[in-house]
Length: 163
Image (cartoon, rainbow, N blue to C red; front, side, top):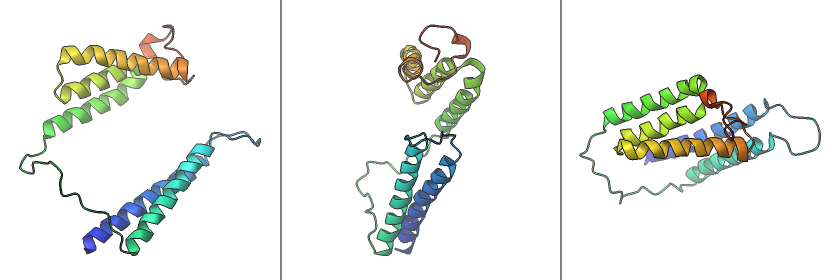
């Protein structure tokens, strides 16, 4: 019972701390000094909601309202963690982070989407074209649809891929 309460308090504290971090970090966003809603509005709203939620969880825990433990999960506890798959996923994520600056978002995202699918057991010849299409769709939506710039890298100059 004491351990359960400590976990609930830790959860509430972590959520509140992330909210405080969000509020503090939002002050560093450059904004004009007019009365319009600026780029800080959304981070402020999220930060406030996180702080309120974290404090509410702490208060609920102090009042004895603990979360219910899930007992009906369909998990085979005799199966060990597949650390090889976890290692592959971590390596693919690191490769994605490194490749964004070197070759651009579309290629890096293709590596990420294909690599994650492959590491989780997908057939490579199905996963590869899907990864390419998914990466290009994300690039086009961000660049053309939202007007946000993801680095096109080696595909710079290709229509619809530049922001």
